[in-house]
Amino acid sequence: MLRHTPRLPENDMERPIMKPIGTPAEELDTPSLVVELSALESNINHFHSRFLDSQGPKLRPHLQSHLSPAIAHMQLRAPGTVGGAAVSTLGQAEIFAQHGIDDILITNLAVTASKVSRAAALAKRIGLTIGADSRRNISDLGTAATSAGSEIAVLIVVRGESDFLGVSPGDAPALAGIVSDTPGLSFAGLMSSNSGSLLDALSNCADEGIESPSAALTLDEITSAPASLAGITEMIAGSYALMDAANLGLMSDLSPAARILTTVMTHQDEGLVWLDAGQKATSIDTGLPLVDGISGATVSRMSAEHGGMVLEAGASWDIDLGSKVWLIPHSIANTVNVYDFIHATRDGKFEAVWEVSA
Image (tube, rainbow, N blue to C red):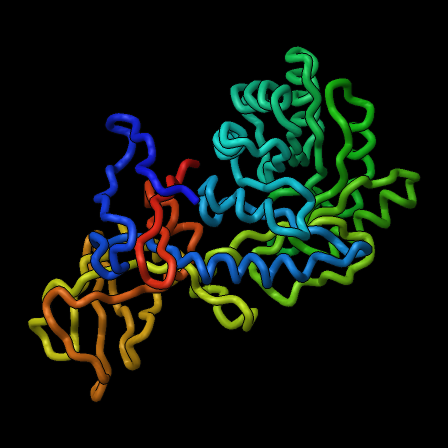
């Protein structure tokens, strides 16, 4: 377990306010992103246990939801994975490669000349897989890989009903053939966020005599995953580790491991409390955070630096200046993105600081 202050590049990252190991969590400076290790470990164990069937798909943890090498290695040490991870961007892939992860799938496209060149360079160091949905992009990737002396594995992105990236299931075989014929590339299979589209594309490829080494299904939500769908080899999911308000209730054995610790700043108006956490502390792009542990309390509004918490009549909570309030972010991925560090606790006591490296 990491128990030291991370190396801090000058002017690049906010410096965490360090506390001694064992400090009660509620004595940490606020607002802070805090992860309870017992909940994190439980979430990983429970979710990974769904992928232990030797005949079923394996899990590829998506690191976008925490951007932390420490958590990534916890996930990859757990059973049930393909042995590699997924990320959203080339920049994230480069960072996690520096932290020892050598099998990375980029679920997005890399189309600019600089990104294509960087992808080819990265593929010399690790096993890199990237999505593609056009002949031009496939050609560019192949040219760059050949020039760099590397090989890039390519997944054809298949569009689901609500997606804006990807090709139709009917167009997947043609692109798969192009990848197979392009020097510097290897055809890795198909990827989609829609199981129906993915299975249709698999069937179309089979009809054309094209074998798909991998069929990867990305899960935007932690649903009762279709782990029994024949032909799907990988499930790509990330929110399960830390959880968030958007996913609460979808799996009863998972709990919010990540919360925002905040402090009451003022309560001049009856039934309204102002906290020191606003949009710079928890993303509200997809919804407002939930208040944890205070019955009848809800977050009603947020400015850049402050959050307004409304108390229903009869809410049982003694309001006091400096009181601590825990918030569950609506989107953990969007919230982690605004932090440089995560404070890790165990049984409510401070244990470590982790960099949000990517």
